[in-house]
Length: 151
Image 1 (cartoon, helix red, strand yellow):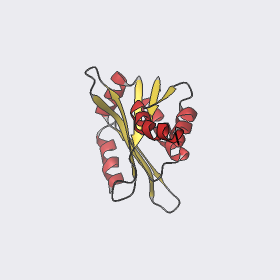
Image 2 (spheres, rainbow, N blue to C red):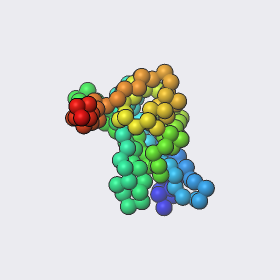
Image 3 (cartoon, rainbow, N blue to C red):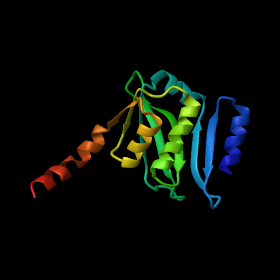
């Protein structure tokens, strides 16, 4: 159903982008989409791209990946979104490659959490972009790491 909706949207709006990845069992493995508004956001504010993934918080157990940035008023703006069946390097590579096709210009900097599969995918797809870790994620683990040092 969702593929039919996105296909129809692509027919109606020429600048709408979406791609679907199907696994060997004919199940949805990946979904990427971006419309005119999201592309305009990226064109204006896409020097720094931040992305994070939820972990199986929907009824289909798909990972929702949101790519965001910050506008001139320090508000979050969305660049594009995707769904993945798993959080592997290959899945992230596929999603970032679809992003690269739709948006052409790579970001100057990419901010992620400490997920090693994200790091590998970012370095593979965007070797020229600087990859940084999110300070919020670091500080969330700081107390635990410091505590472990003194045990």
